[in-house]
Amino acid sequence: MKIIRDALPDNIIKLCNDDIDSKIHKRVWGTNVSWQDDLYDGIAGSCLSASLSSSCLLSVRSKLRVHLPEWNNTQYSYHFWMRHAGINWHDDSNHIFGATLYLNEWQKEWGGLFLWEDKDLHCICPEKGMLVVNDIRQPHSVTPVTIRAPYGRKSIQIFGIDKVR
Figure 1 (spheres, rainbow, N blue to C red):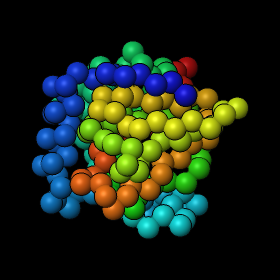
Figure 2 (tube, rainbow, N blue to C red):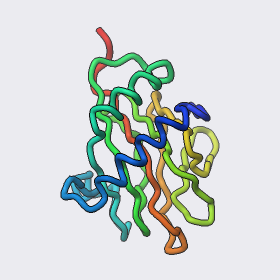
Figure 3 (cartoon, one colour):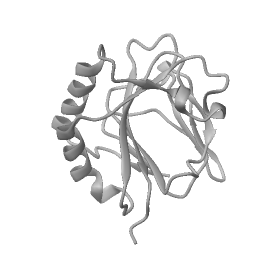
């Protein structure tokens, strides 16, 4: 697992957060019910998903390109993790790589922690601007966001679809 802190400048993070906030009350969100059943089995909360605006997508892609594996096609989407939302253990094996960019301040007491396993079990608390890249299909999960979280956990999920030929 690769962890890059301060992967995006604050002005682009603000642009993305403003974009999410502008969509909150619009009918543009999907939910984790479109995921494979085993990813959210036993998870009570919802993770909402929406597309990035074109200006955010262009800004994010241009800045993150240096940190991500080479790719032809990618999927970028906002994830808004509501209370009780999490995801069970998985390895993103149906993608070339998976990456998460965290967009807001977070505290470990609020859950939503990122876990992964190699020879050992690891845990990190999301940090605004942190990018986590999984390009070797390491098993990972997200603990459920607790009821104590004062707001939703915001991130951008990125999946590589095809390798560069």
